[in-house]
Image (tube, rainbow, N blue to C red; front, side):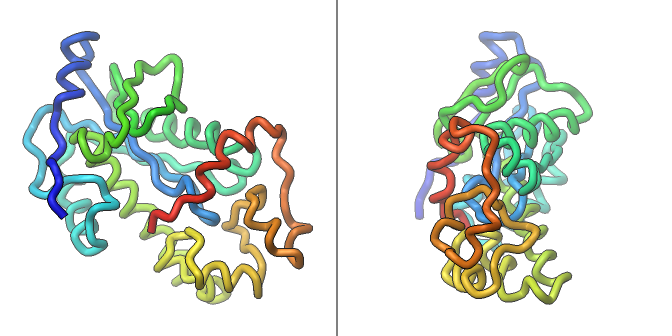
Length: 236
């Protein structure tokens, strides 16, 4: 499918209007999964020309995405990853968990960014970070696209390791669905119930009467409502 390659337009704008010298692109993966962490990558790229074919990770085949991630990890000026665990997601809600993972990623960079380009329309990061939100930033901004690819490949690999390292989890096919609600995943949940890697505060448990007693109640209804739209994502 043809697509417009990402550019440094937003980064140049931030540099010109705010004086920012170090700008990080930030993207997440795993928001809509039923199992596994939510993973955030922060990437600093400078203004160099990116590797050929860079775009939103979801537009790439798994093979191309994996190869490109390896190339990007060598090409970027710096990158770091941050996770929020299923337990943290259950306790905090998705919005706060995303912020926690993003802060872990940003604080993992060797230099604190002066500004952050955040994929999407909602600023889940907030003060004291200087944030520019960009809808479809993973397609239009080079740094965000790089973060998108690295985060996706790293999280997919983590979920595949869960399946490979623990025989009881093979039925959930995490290596194929990365914890998202595929038919195989749903069937395994119905028969075997959730694993320690599942998010137990989410509404999918309402449709599983035999496992509904395991559902965790989040601290506030407001926190639950904030991420209700994310539970419908199919991003694998």
